[in-house]
Amino acid sequence: MFFQQFKVEGLGCLSYMIGCPQDGRAIVVDPKRDIDDYLRAAQINKMKITGIIETHVHADHISGAAELKYQTGAPIHIGAGSPVGYDHLPLHDGDEIVIGNAKIRVIATPGHTPNSISLAITDLIRGDLVEMLLTGDLLFVGSIGRPDLAGGELIEEQIRNAYHSLRVKLDEFPDYVEVYPAHGAGSLCGAGISAKPSSTLGFERLTNPFMQLDFEDFKIQLSQNTPHRPVNFTHIINTNLQGPKLTEKLPVISEYKPLTCKRFLESDPNKLLIDLREATAFGGAHIPGSFNIGMGPKSATWIGNIVKPENEILLLANNHQEIETATTMFRRVGYDNIRGYIIGLSSWILAAEETGFLPQISVHSLHHVREKYSNHMVLDVRNEQEWQTGHIEKAEHLPLPELINRGFNSNLDQHISVICMSGYRSNIAASILKQQGYKNVYSVIGGMSTWKAAGYQIT
Image 1 (cartoon, rainbow, N blue to C red):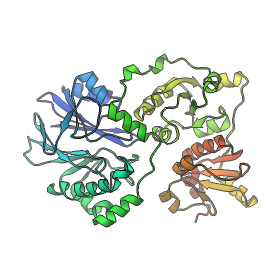
Image 2 (image 1 turned 180 degrees about the vertical axis):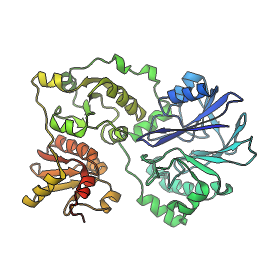
Image 3 (image 1 turned 180 degrees about the horizontal axis):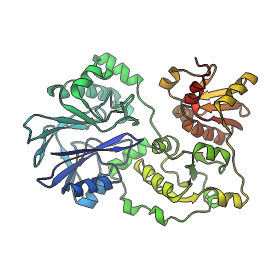
Image 4 (image 1 turned 90 degrees about the vertical axis):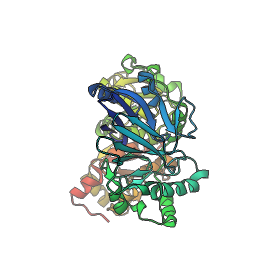
C-alpha cells in the first residue's frame, strides 16, 4: 500500500494519497487547491488518480477536488447528505473502496459538520486489521474540530454528534491505530492543535483533553474554546458547496500588467492594497491606506482575517516571485480577485506621491519611553494563552482578531506602541489602527520575545 501525507505550511492543512503501485491506482483525500504535488506523486509512483474523497465541506481552504477531477477525470466522493451542488458519489457509513492492497472503509462521524466522515485504512498485504484512521476534522492531534461552522442553530446537535463520534464511533478501534487528521497546528478549525502531524488513538485517549470529559464538561469546553471565525470562512464554505472556479479560468499572474496604483485605488473604495514586504520596509515608507501582511507561512491566514474575499486586491512586493507565491497562497483561501501588482515603491515615490510612515520602535526605546511618559499606551495583540505567559505592566490586551472584528476605542491622538510575540502581528495591527485614523502608532520590533530576552520586567 502507498500512503503519503501533504502539508500546507501556515494553514495547517493536511491531505493524503492512498494507493497501490502494483494496481496502478490512487485516491486523494481532502486535496488543496493547487494540485501539482498530487499529480507529481502519482507520476513518480506510477499510479493514476482514480478517486477523490472529501471528508467534509471545508471552511478554511478552497478544495482542489474540482481541479483534480478536471485534470484526471476521477470522481469526487463525499459523505452522503452533504448539500453540495456539484456531481459527486455519496459515501455512506460502512461503504468500502478497495484499490489493490489498500482498503478504505467509510465511517460516518458527524460533529465538525453534519455529514463529516472518517476513513479506516487497511493494508491488505499485512492483514485485515485497520492500520490507520483519517479522521478529517473530527479528531486532531491534541484537540478536536470546532462544531460551530454549520451554523449557530445546529451547535448543540453538532456537539452531541461530535461526542458520539469520538466516544462511540471510534470506540471500535484499538489503541494502536494511527490517527491522521485533516489539520495540524496553524489551523483555525480547532483550538490548541499540536504541531505533530499524526498520533495514535491510544495516545489521544490518554492525553487529548477533549477525550477525558463527560458530556456536560465536553459541551462547556467546546463552547469556551471555539476559535475566532475569520471573515473568509463563509465565502470558502459557499465556494466549496458549489465547487470553485478552475484555475485555468483565473488570470495568469505572469501575464498581469503592473497597474497604476493610484488609479486602481481611486476607482473604488472597496479596492485594497496588500503590502507583502517585511515590517521594517513597510514601516519606513508605504502607500497610505495599505495593509501590511508580510510574506510568510501565515500570510494566507491573516488575509483571511482582515480582507473580505469580494474585495478587489492589488499586491505590492519586492519581486515577481513573491507575487506568484502570494497569489497561490491567497487563492487557497478564497481570494480570486487579485487584479494586479506593483514591484517596490520606486514608481510611487518618483511620481511624487505621498508615502506613509509606521515607526518601528525597539524594546529598549519602548522601555525608555514608558519611563518618561506614563501615559504612553502599550497595546498587546497576542492571544490569551500568550498573554498569560507574561506581559508588560499596564499594557492593554486586545487580541488581533478582536481588534479586526470590533476595532479599538481610544483618543485618536493617543501614542500607542503595538506589540505581539515577534513583530509580525503588531505591524498588521498598527496598519489597521492607521487606517482607523490613529496618528501616533508604533510597532515594536521583535515583540515580547525580544522584551523578555532583554531582561525587562513582565507581570
